[in-house]
Image (cartoon, rainbow, N blue to C red; front, side, top):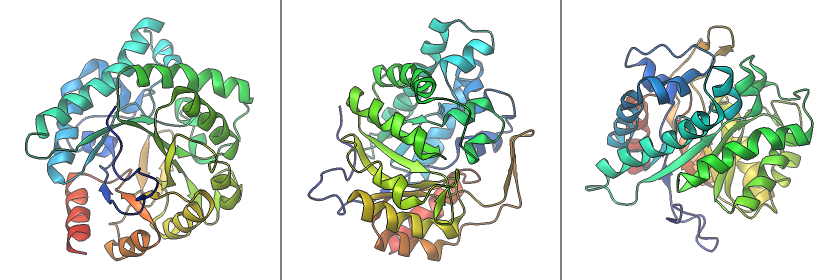
Amino acid sequence: MTPPVGTDREGAFAALTILDGGMSTALEQQGIEVSGALWTARLLSDEPERIARAHRAFFEAGAQIATTATYQASERGFVASGRDADEARALLARGVTIAREARDECAGSRPGLLVAASVGPYGAVLGDGSEYRGRYDATAGQLRDFHGPRLEALAAAGPDLFAVETIPDLDEAVVIAALLDELGVPAWFSYSVRGDDTCAGQPLAEAYAALADARMVIAAGVNCSDENDVLGAVETAVAETGRPAVAYPNHGGVWDSATKTWSRARPLDLDLVDAWIAAGARYVGGCCGFGAADISALARRVAGG
């Protein structure tokens, strides 16, 4: 397995990696409708070339990591849509394969490109907006039964690392971190936050402290959150884990779980990025609302700084 960029513990703060943007945004910019129950995961079976095109566009814009279109993909979700369990696992693996093939196409002129298998929260599959609330009515055992098979299927497909993202709840984080250590696949781990708390209302210091002993968590931070909440989360993540931070906010606004759309989005204030990096962010990109042009602007800003 290729070592992730910037994960050597001694030189953890030496490397800086540009992440990609929102897969849903890149697909919408191609004219694709992604408001169904499977969200972007529908394209894994219906139009995989659209996903490959999005990955290539982000690489060409300057991203160094492709995040797979598996955020909302799970065995449970695919079975509910009419696939059987074997098909569901094959589609999870396909998400990694598509990203790896796109990476290989672009790697000739840009060695060192990586693939991160996206792992979204339990709430994303519920599709009711609870990925931004947490506190699902689910036990630790139920969360383990949900996440375990999808992590195993994704790991078997050979990503370079996991992108565990938009986790709203400390309780869910503890379950996933334990599973990561069992699998032995490195991961960055990012919460969705509001101010100084997770979206479920737990203090960020406690949330990041819960990751400090997780061997496979090589960076911790924040994603799909307001840009003004990023710096505090980055500072807390670095202080509590002693590891580099990951930072990729959304474009702001309010998530409508019925239409699967954001309202009142705004451009990223690139002046904020310097402070994130100074505080220890070493994986920087964008989430919902960020297309290839946004990642290109971010990459230019980072290169210029």
